[in-house]
Length: 391
Ligand SMILES: Nc1nc2c(c(=O)[nH]1)N[C@H]1C(S)=C(S)[C@@H](COP(=O)(O)OP(=O)(O)OC[C@H]3O[C@@H](n4cnc5c(N)ncnc54)[C@H](O)[C@@H]3O)O[C@H]1N2
Ligand code: MOO
Image (cartoon, rainbow, N blue to C red; front, side, top):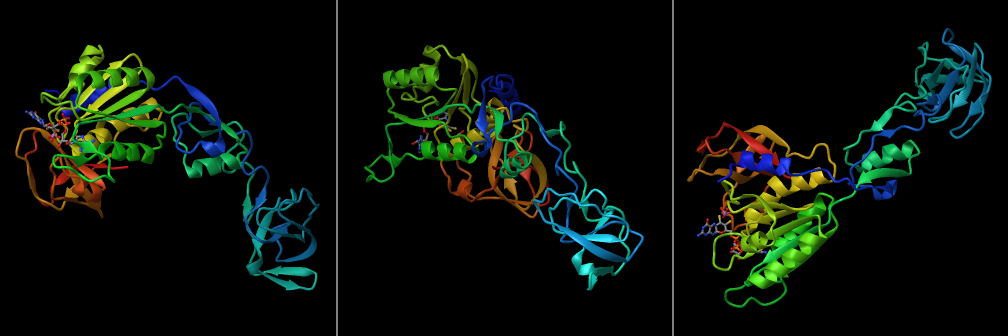
């Protein structure tokens, strides 16, 4: 059986960033990944800018200045100012080129047409120099950066309207199983509500993937094979839930084999998610996630999400791991590596009750997964443990 470490390495090796890029408007770019470095087209700020409402001073050797004019934010004038003179100025306004400093109005007393400073000013105080944040031609954001709300604001301040981004993959989710019915109907004996497709779709959307289509197929070889054939031809990534274990009605493995996909691995020495299957066909990436809901979601976060992020061009596509201190005791029963639903709070990690792969309750309460490698059999309170933060 493939180890977790080997499986992660294989998934990484078989995953390439898409070559498809596209120019989109800045306002639609949230969550996309830059396909090119962005160079600043301007100096920011574009001119010497006042950081305060107050007075621009023609010199710094005096405390008393005569008031000779005014500059508002948005004004394009550059009034002359000499030693001993001051100009009324406001936050964001262009500082006259002759000004040596700006003093905030709270530190000034007005005496007729003069202003008197409480203390001497220092050179360039309260003046944002031209290009202080970034200079024209410097890299504003690098290729591989995901665009955040702050990133959109930052690029807008530079006057950028369009960005070149990697195209996001199209994703098909396939739920397999005769027992599954949609929530909203009455359950007959033997039936359960289908939850994996809506859960995986939500996990995808939470990470910025929106080109998603959900399909459902019964435990029937022909139906499974023909649906898989169609989606593998049509989508960049196929996430199958269930039907990948060894039961007589688990047809996913056989269908994929008959469709001549390139199997990279099947079965990982891990709990949950042992029957995880990973394959490629041409440019399509295929994950068959085990049907048990917690297995499906664990495998999604650990293997599928970094893959999707890498395809989308994200430089920081790997899982974010950290070492933290356990608040709990835990004994592992088997030999497999384990991923445990946990809550991280104030650097401490609490491992939750109800870790069975059929259960989602602990997952719904968790904000992290604890990773217990094969060789670790026990966790005690105070032990350092490896933690994967959930997005
Ligand atoms: N003889 C063996 N049996 C099993 C093994 C094994 O090694 N030998 N492995 C077990 C493990 S571990 C897992 S995990 C499961 C995985 O089985 P499948 O991937 O084939 O999944 P199914 O059998 O279709 O379903 C498992 C379980 O999950 C429920 N399920 C499936 N899909 C959904 C869905 N979309 N929404 C909600 N719930 C779903 C399904 O009803 C089953 O209860 O195999 C073990 N067996
Ligand atoms: O891998 Mo299964 O997910 O252990 O139940």
